[in-house]
Length: 85
Image (tube, one colour):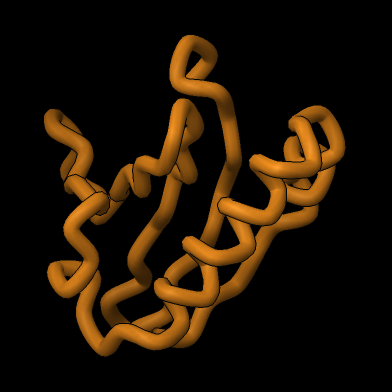
């Protein structure tokens, strides 16, 4: 899938340990290689939201994603520790 990363994600990544940055990069590579979000086992649709927001979980961290269904682009909105997400 085509992805678009917001600047905020890079600022979030500056605050996390280097080994977690490597895991995050691997997760994003996987995201770009799939044709549907359902192909990834660690992605869940956010409950209670009418908009197509998703959470990609890895280790103790979470990416917040938005799926623009018209353009079929995944926007990566944030990267947070699970206690802060």
